[in-house]
Length: 268
Image (cartoon, rainbow, N blue to C red; front, side, top):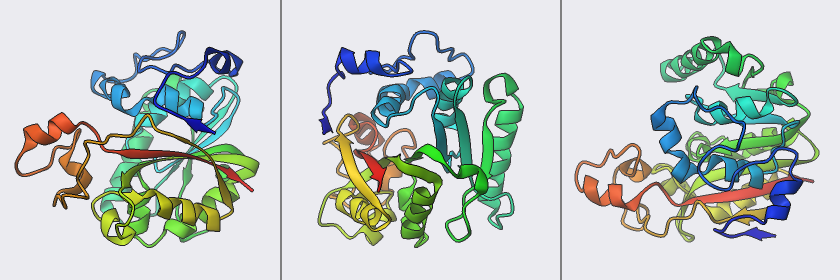
């Protein structure tokens, strides 16, 4: 089953327990006032509601969000799941020795505690591929990971992470992956350092961990992204929103955000 870069059928939208939008704006009834204008502006590129619908997230789902970072997707997921479902944010362990990761976890916790009206039902768990999975992440309907697999590859933790995703899910549960996509034929160890992975590599690691690829979407594809082909030193961070390239910033701004794979896996 393939979802191309078009609007989803109205019958599919109507059948969903929670009606998501296939456009950038939030569905009717969703209050986005807790999100900054900057974060909402990225909906055009990230297409969060279309993405979550494709991944099968429903209002009554138990969802585990892997490495939520600053909480961009948490802002979208928390209101959707507050009434009937459950959102578990599997963040860096609070005991991490990394100052960056510790600060990221602390900032995330503060974000949630500062707005309990929106985030009061979000559960925070530890995610460490080198340890046992956090009990709070078990029995999930959906596990989601957004643009973070290259970091796990860089840490030689990708296979262990996919094994944990499998352990978190119910039998038949779904794993949704959005990841910066490198062209085929490039070494994943090398491309990961620039933020990208070849799709075949991700699928192979997922398959070895007990997943089958169920569907693929193409609405995050961007044929203008040549970061890997042109061996751009700054990697994916040369593109928006980072724009960390030392030169040609206007050129990279015109490219837009990265070329991304959007894959839906099912636990065997």
